[in-house]
Length: 357
Image 1: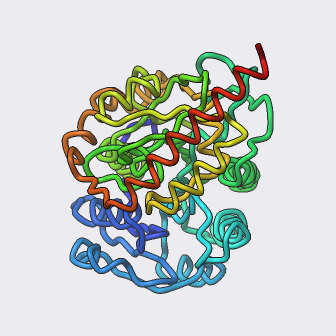
Image 2: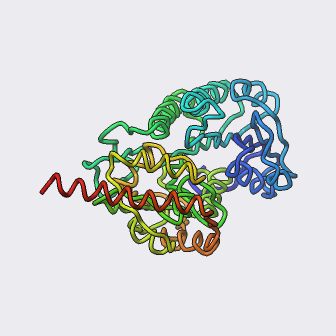
């Protein structure tokens, strides 16, 4: 079968992580595809209440990844879409240890089950451009063949490297299975609710003093389209998935109508703590390094093999702005904390300037 051929659309598809936004939307979209006979959504936890109606045509099974082997065999599954990844540690789910358990150990268990599934012929794995890491020695643009210059400092980036390593081993053991790895840029758009979108939704946005990194995003709808095509068609290999073009961090903040507050890089962890106190999500080393160095990837392989070009990074970000404009309501206490953040940042910068002069 040649890449892009739809004559062998899968019969039974298992989607992991359907309790979360991405997994639920992918499963629902596949279930609406008449070429696909059956879609089974797997997650150890029930879906969020707002996702229940979306999954009405998806068979849901509450199951841990270490118990997946029997399901793949009993239901004659021929395609697995692995989306059950955690991008940031959650203290209520075991913190960093729980995150690694889900990402790395969970993927190992899934691949072990897939290796023993005789009817399996396709595996689609969600990855991330975090696989490239970020450092001052990085190239201007990453291709799929670029090796990371340094091991990522952040937990999610390290998990992605481990996951892709296990997938390479799976490919060697099961060359009969079409394995597709999708390295997504950060999601954005009207529907995305991520650490990054919460970052840009703050009225006061912390940035790293002296840095203006180049960023890329992928619109959530375009990510769904690529995942759908990866299941309905054959696209073996690894692909960068991002919107063409770039935005500098300063451009993105201005377009979002927010106020940038430069802080010294060693103090960014303190800024993250203040941001958490404002209720704007969790920030880790993955995000800090991205805001220092930025990351841009080449998407020509995706455009050529899928005959599909995602909307530009600028267009995807504009859609996010339209959906979220004016959506952040800041209380008096939150505003006071933000003002203290601004004053502390100014003091840090002035102190550094005096020390260097």
